[in-house]
Image (cartoon, rainbow, N blue to C red):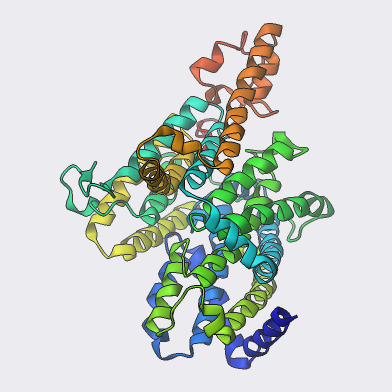
Length: 545
């Protein structure tokens, strides 16, 4: 009852006209910076720090929370419409969301993202209020071996599930892990893979890498094929979700929330891992697995719910432990320190009015996000009707501006071009983009936890499975890796080449250029390879992102 009364006091503070105004401004600004590739909520909050120095602390934090939540939704908009994630956490949304947009269902994809964000954000905030002490206690009890096992699970599951060839998937993952190693060794302090180029000593910023791979790589690919592909207007479609869309979305919303909040609350968590795992889960559980890779609405609903639920979960260690799990939370903590407020376990006790006003504002911000963005879904979808030369020229401009504004270094522009060419090459040779991004994001975190594990175990390999949670996760990994091998052996023993073809395609048909040379050895005469029907001269690549 004491918690409920504190929450009511928080609502009383958050619902004042001035705080409502700041919440509204935060949601609008957050959505805008989320839409612009490379300009995420962390950057927006950081740029506003000098402006908010003289503001009331609670008002500034409420605006920052609105920017955070709005940025989570805004990043999904460019993922769906332009195949260009504005945030690393919305990378997974591009896989199915952009395919839905190209099929004339952009408004439905944006609507399920908005409603899923509202549902997950509201449930996640309620969990923050009710179970935060228990989640924090569990998170603190986990050691480095368990964190490392969780990250290995994310790397393997996503890489093994996506794409038609596991070899290509792991090759892309290897490139991502190599990019993640660039910089200074965290233990010895020596430079790694910098090739004597001083700006690389601090490593590659994930914003630069993500913008280069997605925005620059996609723009270069479109430019290379623009004259060979007839210009056509992509239909926007009906503006609202139908009965079938609701039926297929509500379970992924809840499952995504169940993934997102715990991962967000982990001190080594974040929004990237649960969105990846949510996508994998929906693909496994869907009654329409053949639609995945071609615009399945579950592939948008689940990851977007996980994305926003993790945002509420992120505030758990930030407020209760003073431990940020992403860049936005780190900047918000910097603001508290700037205001002379000590974050940590005593924050709830020393600043209850501030904390509960912030938590109450999350409920308000989620509602504003839904009320503002749901009616605008058809308007955002009409971006697809802009002629592609103008559209991708604008993407290049904002992507370059966003990448440069990260560190204000000219070297980042050269890195943007080089990595953008790598993104072009990935599309050219059929390597999936997602494992590379996953390797860049999770690779350094996994290395840190691996180093800690070996330090705690005095270099003994047995330290990797020294915790029950780690053992459980390694068993899950072994099952995930062995089951496909067992199933393939059974198919070979039965001589079922047609079943193999269907299995490789995830229940659907494969096109000729989607098969690796290894796959061709198992197919007899290519009778199960689907032909693509394209206009003469149209580009023949598969959209591997």
